[in-house]
Amino acid sequence: MADITIEEVKQDLETAAYVERLLPPVRAPKYRNCMPDIIYTPQELIFMEKRPLKIRPTQEQITLWERVVLKWLPVLSLDERRLVWKRANRIPWKLLCREYGVSRQMLAIRYDKAIIKIQYGCKKCQ
Image (cartoon, rainbow, N blue to C red; front, side):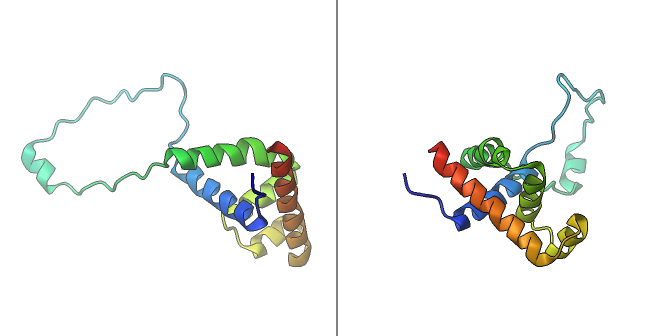
């Protein structure tokens, strides 16, 4: 198999973060809505605003999300995991610098080291 590059790792992390936003919310088992169904007349249905389509992730996207969350992220420490996931969600560097209490350069070095750890972990898994 071909080695995975750092850019591919970053792209897959961003895709996994996007897919997680598309996944339906987690509910308790056997959770049901107890409200009775509302029956509308045909005229009411015509004048209603159309609901936007719910975008659902494809099977390949869910597989990629599982690979990232279950195989790649456990390789990292907790702080590295948070940093990588927040960058995948495109949180600005300025906010991350305030949260971690370090400079932009130091945070970028930590981020790069975490990405290299993921890349090396992927080589070991193959």
